[in-house]
Image 1 (cartoon, rainbow, N blue to C red):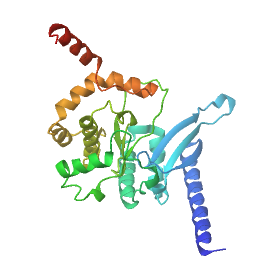
Image 2: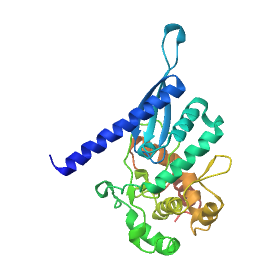
Image 3: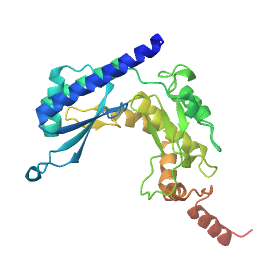
Image 4: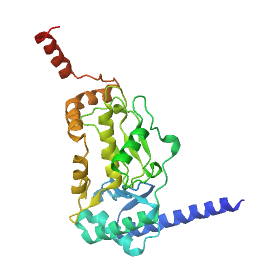
Length: 281
């Protein structure tokens, strides 16, 4: 057996042992069954789900599922107590929530985010090249934050998902760690102007520079004052927002059905028809 394999087996046994410790401690404090599930999510490193309600009259205990990130592996007993209080009382356990938030914050700093897999990135689309647009934006608006193109976060077109009932459309997203920017593939078509794709990409790069922060009342602020100020200073902000308001219904339809939109809207067609009638020749 190689040394690497022995180390891997030892680490695996150690991780299982820590999970068992968590399970025993939580079940002892909560008086219910606990099912632990490892998670790698840095956005939601601690998640709770009730799988079964208690039915004492039938001798059935409550069963909860708790998803725990690896950063909780080395947590002291005091934090296990805080997690138990959070499971029992939720946001009402303010002291426990504060302790958990601090542990998560410090733990995420200690555990660097894994790099995005290059093979999954697709910046060059059929109609728009996100890498080229990002480099333009870096030079014009983010030179202080990203000194070179290599310092930009990974950028990719997302995957198309057809057939869903949509009432809204998220045109872009930025990982909270600023390590991956995704742009909705519905924008990768000739009917979507280049200036609008640039605007959406600018918005997501702002998220990479100004990540969400937690306010004193516990709310997460995604678009703070500095974010809004910088976004509104973008030269084509008004033009892009107007285009978005006019075209969102067509983008939604395109995302649902996979049917491309044309470069000219119904309103523009009607306006040109009226012009031809009023001013023939």
